Each structure stands twice: as C-alpha cells, then as structure tokens.
Image 1 (tube, rainbow, N blue to C red):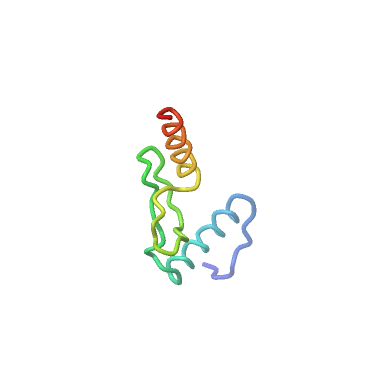
Image 2: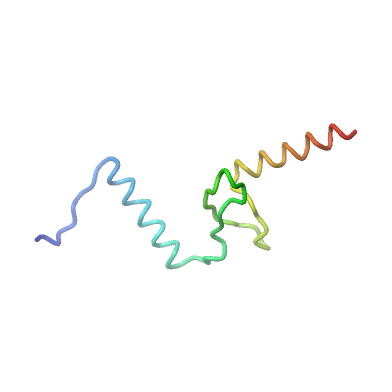
Length: 77
C-alpha cells in the first residue's frame, strides 16, 4: 500500500478542497459562529460574521424574510 499523495482531478479535487477547508475551519475558527438557518425548509449551515452573533438565516432566506416583512408593512399602510 502506497502512502504517496494521489493527484485528484475534477469532482475529487473539489470535494477534497471542501473537506480540507471544513477541517481547517473546525480546527481554527470560533465554532459559535457556525450556525444553521432558522428557516425550517432550508437548514443551510452558514458562518455568522455579525459582531453580536445575531444572524438567524442564510443569505437567501434572510432576504426572503426582509421582503416578506416589507410587503406586510406596505399592506398595512
């Protein structure tokens, strides 16, 4: 069995790069900043970069929530 590194290509290279990035993040970063989107239909994991760790949604679900709240305010007026 060889221990020499194998050159990955295509999907293997992408998956390897993602796995390495996740491993580095888990080893070095503040895990409290890693959150799951509050939208029950989404459940994406994201990095909360706010000062007070207040982010609840991934970028796309947060935008949908903003639009929903804006439209509700417009209906009331």
